[in-house]
Length: 181
Image 1: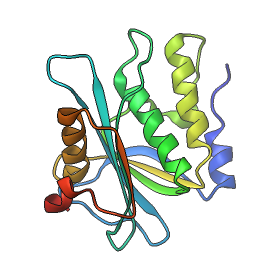
Image 2: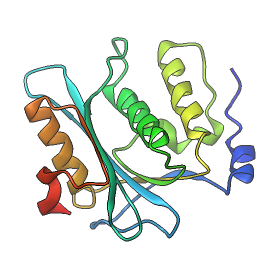
Image 3: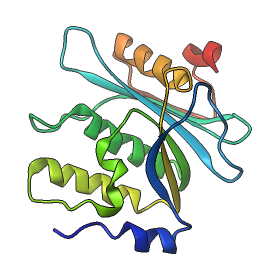
Image 4: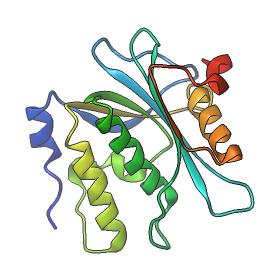
């Protein structure tokens, strides 16, 4: 397969930035007209079950959407972060957010998505899915979140994992994270 034409896509779609950078020690609101998407992943203790937590906020820090969900199972050898990243991007697109600042755990391939040459391995097929989702956004920046700047998403995923809860909230703050917002 050929490398992803992200530079062409960036010119056509407002110059997305796929370089991961650290977000600092505290949560910061997104730029006006953008949405901050914080996400985290956690494994249920003593199991192979992983959960993802997602929180979408606007520049006034209002919660617009949230989700905690079991991470889709991928073939053996594919890290659950890949499946979680797919679910996060798909959820955000399904909710209608196309101008986002994505903040969460490191996904190595996002650093080089603009020049990533995908092969024919099973993992490459899943990475291609992430790339296809990325290209549906008008604007996307990616930041590596510190635990303090991502505390609400961490609390959400830990709650979901400990209660085996799969839930979506729209325009309301999940009660479990009200204290950390």
